[in-house]
Length: 152
Image (tube, rainbow, N blue to C red; front, side):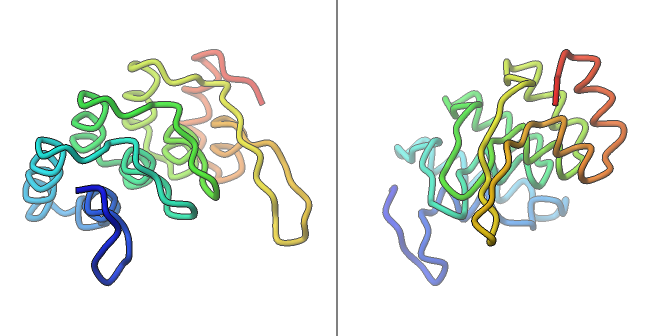
């Protein structure tokens, strides 16, 4: 259930949650059904793949609220960081998904979480949900995070 496979060479739970098709009404229910089936059969909601993130991280990047809720209800770690990626809240903030940010904060995500991201030049920087929302010019997300106590 948690094995890497298929043409993408990633575990099924990540493939289903990474699909941008989740944004389309006609595919959302099917993908959520597939994810629920995988989780019912023992798929790890916290399984991560370096550079591709984990299921909750991917769903937050897409703003897929129903998928995020299912993963959180099934034990997905809200603060999980996979090497080569940020956490769910930082991804939702950077992508401008205010409803996803609100869901994660309501479920206990740390608005002041930090990840170290190294650039191609070898220099790195600390990133936070607020810094990423501002960097990506997501004003409504930045305002919500600041009102929730987030700092740069």
